[in-house]
Length: 197
Image (cartoon, helix red, strand yellow):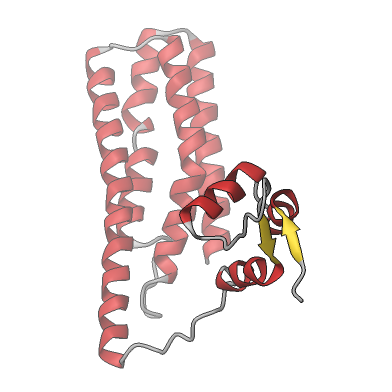
């Protein structure tokens, strides 16, 4: 004769609450008997549910070669679109700063924000640039991939109009800070070039 479990015992074995086990009995998901006041669940009913929930790996067949090519092309398009989004973002940011520099619409705190932005985004741009480079053909000789290279250089060249504007607007201390930031940026680029070469 088969052993039976109480509702609490069945719930414990299934790893669910007693309330959930009760709902499962009421919905018919869990077989049970109610000879009197309490429910009795056959052990085989608990075993069935456990076996039904067993995760089995599916055997995945390789797609036909034509599909591989299509998927490869789609993945390449997605990567190119991601690089372009970063380049567009940097271009927008740099354009706004060029307007601010031209009109003199910046102060020390906004300069601090600019320096922090460059410091924060530069490692990401450099990594993406190297990643994009490695996706190019072996004949590709540039330091970074074509799209990210434009973004990196766009940010780098932002210092060209910035330093003279800082010289006009602030004292030598602020000018020295701007020059130090430019030197730090050049050092970071140099290190990235050595790493990527």
